[in-house]
Length: 373
Image 1 (cartoon, one colour):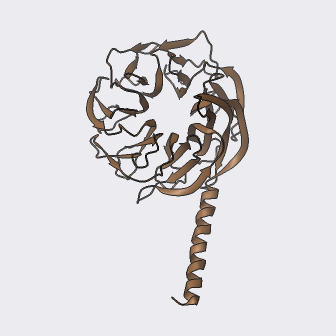
Image 2 (cartoon, one colour):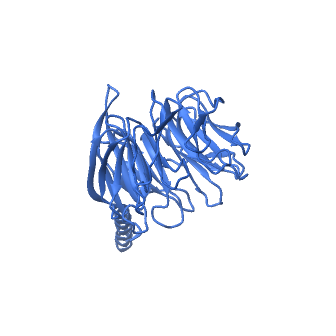
Image 3 (spheres, one colour):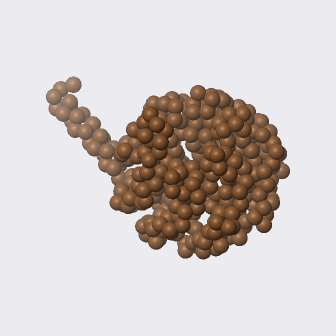
């Protein structure tokens, strides 16, 4: 290769690298908001005050769950009510009244449903306590009656909480699994029209629990996640074949067990893509850049930054986008916070105090989507 060719090649390579860096930098931009100063462990989104925009609830293990109301342009204000100390949170309409309720849980605590009065009013006296010791949970209709039930992931065995309507929740006696569950999702994994459960965690295999249509779950297959140390789970169509695949975020520093592809009938096979050995804490899956493919946001654990991997015909590609800081990701959520039609990013944080298992407060952040502008 002569000098002229080498120079041209170098210029081309530098152009590609510069373009890639630009794409990485333009995925999200920091809104500048630093929200609260609590130890956040989880994040959930939904329109709590029925004003047409997306609000946020953070699960804060030191001060109690915090409601962040959105002004419609992506600026958040603390609603001013704490809903109880928790480490897991979700938002769903459990009583079918059109208002979104809040579910909170934590190890050593009962699962609690905070019923919404329709205008983001939650009363300590109007709650439902059921189940206990939740490490994670998933919400979905398991018995086909159109209301939402709960799969509760626990430290020793999992359980199902059935919704009987009229704000009545009932713990069932069936036990599922026998080890800690760190991530669970409810979806129709086998394509038979009812919702199943996929759950995985620590020190044991994960499971696909198949539904008989009435809410009775049975073991369909195991997932060899024994050494993966799953801390969160999500789903989406990874390979574009029309069925849902499963994604796990791993806190054990193992690089290649994140993607589990569905054959359409519920059997999952690992796709060994290398996301790096850095341990991660939380994840969410959605189409960030509006190209029709599912993308992943991987929330960092300890020193690991939050990262974005873009989906496509050849699997996930590292976007190069990183959000680094002293905080440990306690939750990541994608939603259209500024009402412009694309998905923005909310990151909940806490600080892990090495050698003590103490979790210290750190402000949460909001990053606006620039990829589709």
